[in-house]
Image (cartoon, rainbow, N blue to C red; front, top):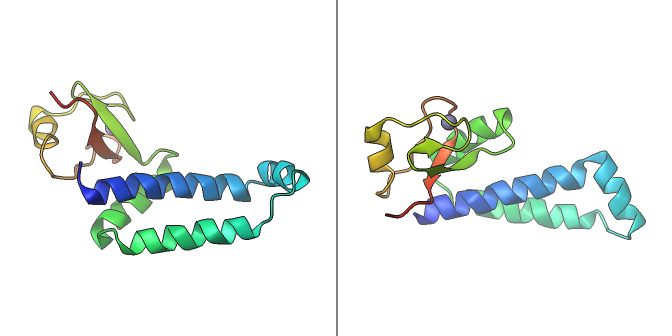
Length: 117
Ligand SMILES: [Zn+2]
């Protein structure tokens, strides 16, 4: 897995944490427990720093997919995109084994491979 892709997966985690922290119900329950909202600033700061290290084109692809789906980056298992469960063309499935970053032609999510055989 490339460094870019690893960064992108962390970015997705951060985005989900930010989304949770800004979700009103969740934020309410957290503030009851004494969670300070400056935690959110830290999350956002980390997110921005990380975003700078990711290729601009890749970041745009991610942000486009993230607008449509909760999970913008999904694993591929046995040649199947686990975002939409459509079998990928052999050509895409093979190239995924290398350092290319691929998106699913069906759903547009960014793919990463979990079977290394
Ligand atoms: Zn897909």
